[in-house]
Length: 386
Ligand SMILES: [Zn+2]
Ligand SMILES: [Zn+2]
Image (cartoon, rainbow, N blue to C red; front, side, top):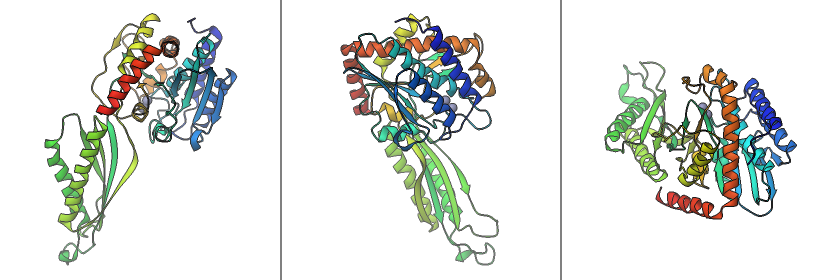
């Protein structure tokens, strides 16, 4: 495959800069999503804007006969105050760029290239809804790569459930008539104690962390209302289910002990854990080496959750990271330093190389049914064993 041409290079650098200059929060990425859609349209993609009822989401498609479907996932949401401190300006540009570059180098290769614009990764990620509503059902592989200070293979992330426990009691004067009260805060504190004890009997890869959102207003009134919010995380979907049930039992026991009422809700969209498709990752690694990126590290332990996890349970998926820094620089994400790095020369060079490698990977999958078969077999086993 030819290297990315000068014209496309300039278009991608401009897209990266434009989104950097117009940071928009999740589900308000109007300018950013429009800029992606316009560029894809210009390059011959058929686009659906406002995809699946999400105004700032989109789907772009280019088909060249019957063949595999390769999806590039594009993110473009920013953070409050720090703007593109997570670098989703360059991240989305990479995916859109890879799709365009692949389209322009398809030759006789048959298949379909799609770009899914996925809003709000930082908050209530749209990929969860897209995955649940069939956006990836006809996709053979999904690719996305995050900017970082080193090149890292796709790894694992936590499955997540966001649980809110709302306790209701009965107010009473805490000195004059405490016997008339039902203490909702006691129920809440018992829940924390129960969960603290539960932690000894959980697997080391799981996490439970929470806060008290409401715990009464004055010390001399028995609180009739208390509320706690927890994130429960686990390395697999099946263990998350089991652990969430136990955490809920802790809250039920706390409520029962205090005689309080309890309501359990999920206050944010949860995530599935990321199932990395290693065959697909190795294919990308081979292509990264071809474009001159050789220092690729193995992924470490899970350190968070992502809505890409939900995609990875529907179709073979990878979510590696690519280095955008100059040698010696190590700025972490969600900082102003990281944001500034996305526009500099090393980031531009990394963008070009990664666009090529991702496009080459897409082409290889379309051209090699045996490789795709291996990817799909791995996927099937991973989902069954999760
Ligand atoms: Zn982030
Ligand atoms: Zn990010």
